Length: 402
Length: 149
Image (cartoon, rainbow over all chains, first blue to last red; front, side, top):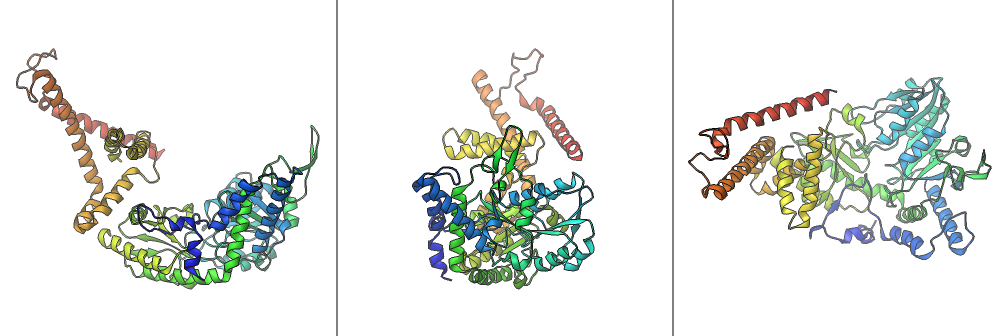
């Protein structure tokens, strides 16, 4: 991987902040966007603005083609057929679509975990308020799951298991394949929140054997406001649309309507065409580099990050100490210092990190960190030099204040 | 949290001349609004001020450490000193305008109380301190009550 060539593709990385270079270590929140993605989105607005599936003119036809191409690209990226991809705003909307679309009877059990992002927890809490029973599998203090714990929780009445694939706090990856097998053996469906995994390593929904998968475009170099729900076609057909409106129906009278086929019935109203096309360009960009190469590269820089953090005595790293068991982010707390203070001091030195709860309250409380943690999250445009410099600056701050 | 009050006044004055400070004044106003309605902030202005100043002080590590460690006490001291000096300045300016001196020795005719001048601040210092303490205690009690709810 040619890091310099990659960095040259990102317009924002060519800028300076307050006259100095900066390091963007907040890719788990949202990633920077390459020129290719911006150009693709811009082309929709400047060259062929139209509505897909509605008008018959040339711009509308072109929009329809590009929109369909983007769906195919997103589908291929996770080894799914295009008919099983539904456009959503983001991962949150994708999970909500399943939570609100599936019919749960009172007493039906939903199993999730204490490692979930709010997006993977709150929709199920809402379902539980209507009579379903919500139960949890707890991870270890390092954020790892034992598949046997899922087996113990699953029962005859379990309808669905919802699990985060890669944690945005502990950087661990759940044994999704094993979880899916256990759940299916018990007759339950499986939904995976893959917001932090799809951008970083190859994902194959068929090999994982899951029923639903949700991910966001903006965490994988794409624009904000676009995401995907993958679902098995037979299951998507059973989902009640969360929204109804334009293009979701075949016919309507004043009293009733006939729902359209997939995917239209679940995509109400004018879609985020520029967003989908941008996500398609992001998929092309990532695929052009190769997801395996990206994963290998991230492992290398993550190794430097984890080893650097572990070398600072005041730092407590969340998640496993072994970098091989981790993704490309590292959340940590510092003895005697508050997370926001550290992030703000690093911000002063042009290192952009996230601090706080990272929308994952239960896991922070489980780990005894009511004020959250600081998180450095890397991506393909981060260099080993940046990591080295970050560790030096962090050490200096901690040495002074902790 | 108390530093928001100082920040609001200071940035509000500075924002008359510079747009840069208008953003900070707005942020300080939001912070004060949250403070008086007992609402929590995500990253409070004080946290930002603390981190910014501590960062700048890092050229003298011991001073930076002291500032970081005792920030809360320092911000209280600074706030009290700020408002005390503000009151004292107002008092002095008023006296200067009315009596031609900042510390008039003679009782003035503004109050109806014989022998007392309402603007001789020393005579009211004890009352002022008690009033500030009552307000502070009431504030923290209300805040605690709200938190328990």
